[in-house]
Image (cartoon, rainbow, N blue to C red; front, side):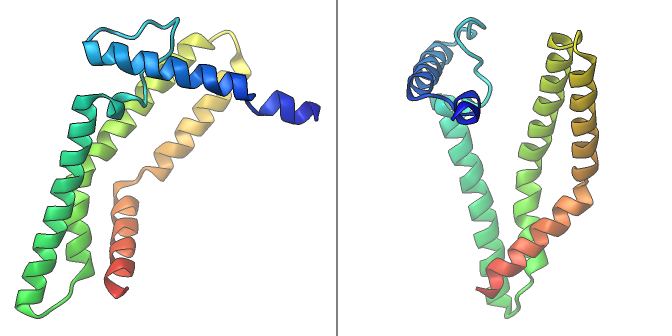
Length: 154
């Protein structure tokens, strides 16, 4: 249908996106900046050896922290899911802050690119303002605690 064609990527378009992404990763692996004519490197950082290693180490540190806290609780004979969530949350906080900083940068870039389209800039601003409300550290910590509680009860 016409709506599907205007909304969904074709197989050929998807192949082009994959190819451009692979080229971008190769360029990023050389240490050079990705040319805007090829594609943006945003989101592909984890595909580089450094990004892959950084992500793996980060996950390892979170797992070790949670397992150490869990082991300590088992040795002491108690279970505190909030303590487990805090162990994870403290190490995950930097990733969350970095993601929010990148999003703010992307927002500023998008505003500059689309400054001639007042309706789009207004929509972007509304979205960011909503996300700012959603990004409440207390809310995030409470959600982390709930998830940890669910994991402990399994």
